Amino acid sequence: MTTRVVDPDLVEPVDPALRPRNLDEYIGQERIKDNLRVYIRAALQRGEALDHVLLSGPPGLGKTSLAYILGEELGVEVRTASGPTIERGGDLAAILNNMEDREILFIDEIHRLNRAVEEVLYPAMEDFEIDVVLGTGPGAQSVKLPLRRFTLVGATTRSGLLTAPLRARFGIQATMDFYSPAELREIITRSAGRLGVEIKPEGALELARRSRGTPRIANRLLKRIRDFAQVESDGTIGLDITRKALTRLQVDEQGLDKMDTRLLRTIAEKFDGGPVGLSNLAAAVGEETDTIEEVYEPYLIRHGFVQRTSRGRIITRRGLAHLGLAFAPPTVTEQEELF
Image (cartoon, rainbow, N blue to C red):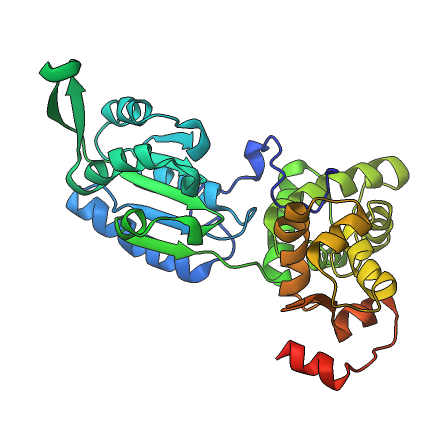
């Protein structure tokens, strides 16, 4: 699979200057921020650890940034780990045993923890203790080791894959939404200031409109547009250089890239608008079925360019209009399949 500039899963080294440092600097997700302010203030007043927090939502929306902000607001350290890298229960037990009082353990992609590791988490989250086995064979003994009271912050892009027992142990659960163009424009303007580049309001809004509602994509595109503005213009990011750079990067007015458009055009032209099965579509565009289903389709479906049916994928009226093609109403048989 080729690297895509609009891929929200693509994680690059983060410029520390672009990360918001506290809730006041964090733009968007207002409902979540307002609730967290209450929970943080209450925990500080009681001198207790914040309840365990689960942050869910698509990649690139700021879950990691929010975890670090929680540490900043609470005045504690944030220790980080990733679900796939914690292979054994003993690895997690060692991390938890070294946690200080009220510290935060941030586990990214927590839905990818294996079952043995989850079993260690249950008593740790609920009773702040872990079971440690001493010795081997018939003489082995299980000893309960007390832990300092900590806060687990879990982040997941696939909340449906979390087991029910693990989900139930999070007292605070927040689902993050995509950002509006106005919110992204504010993020882009702030990021441009921290990067030391001037950006005009119309340039920021144009970039915001094409960033697929995702701050990670917006900041990545901003850095590339900065390069074009520096080399091929006067260094200021205005509307013209923004459009020129995004055209060169093959990001269109709806935030679709070359592969998105290729998928739409393949369904419309090679398969007469569909329905087409996923395997046939994958073969036609030269991609894996999993890649199409997990990487490309979600955005196209969410914005109404493609629809899944019992017989396969079809391009919608909006998808055809985006390609500049005429809409052909489905036949009676096709209508029955859709419903």
